[in-house]
Length: 358
Image (cartoon, rainbow, N blue to C red):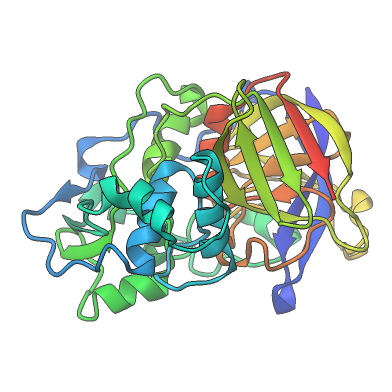
C-alpha cells in the first residue's frame, strides 16, 4: 500500500526542488534494509581517556553540543555563532521560562551552568565496522539517476562520520589535521554520545542500526503536538503541558509550492523508506526520465525517515544535505537533518497534530 508524498532534494546553486512521488505507508514493504537490524560491537565508538584540550564552556562549540544533546538543535555543529545557534539558545530559554534573548544573559548562564563540566569533544577510536562502508563516491545528485544504485548510502567515510556526530567534514578536518580516517585511528569529535537503541521499532527496516549510526537515542520525550513556523524556519515539539521539549531548524516551502498553512495530523512513520520516483508528478523532471524505485539510504531524496501527514503529498523527512537546512527552498514539505528527523520520529505517533503557521 502506498501514499503520495512530496519530497525535497537539493539541486544546483543550493536550491531545493521538491519531487512528488510514492512511498510505503508502513515498513512492511518487501525491500531489503540498508543495514543489519542491530549495531554490532565493532560499530561502536569507544572513548579514550585523554580527549585533549577542551573548548571553554563559553565557546559556541560547547554551547552547540549542549543544546544538541538537550534537543534544541543548532543545525550542524560547527563552532560558529549564527542564526540557528541563536535560535537554539532561544528554544532552550523558552523551555526554561527565561527571557528569549538568544544570548548568554546572566539567567541563561545560571541555567546552563550544570553542563559547564560536560566536555565539548570526545576522543575515540574509529570502529572497524563503522568505517567499512559501503560508500558511493559517484552517487549522482539527480533522483532519476540514482535508481541504478544498490543503496543511497554515504559518498565517503568523512560524510558518514560527520552525520554521526552532527557536524560537517570541515570541522572534523580542523579537529584532526593529521587524520587518515582509517579504522583504529584515534580522532576527536563533538561529544555526541553513543545511542541507546533498546526498544526501537522498525528492526525489520534496520531502524535501530540507523539510530546508532546517527547518534540518536530511541528514548525521547513524547510529543503532544508539533508546530512548524514558516517565518522562523523552525519545527518545535511540545508536550501535553504545552512545554517546548525540542526544536529543529527546517526547510519548508517556496514561492512555487508554499508551506500548506493549517492544522494537519501525523498519519504514521516509515523508517528507511524506498523512494518511488514518478516523473509525471514532478514539474522539473526531464521528459526522458522513467519511473523507478530508489533504494533506501541516508543520501536518498527523503533521507532516513518519512513522517506522513494528513495533507496529501506532504510529510516531514530527512535530507542528504544537512548544511542547507533552513537555507534553501522546498516544494512545501518539511525537511530536517537526518539526525533531527530520526529524533522527531521517536517523539511522534499517529494522530499527533502538526500545526503549520506563517
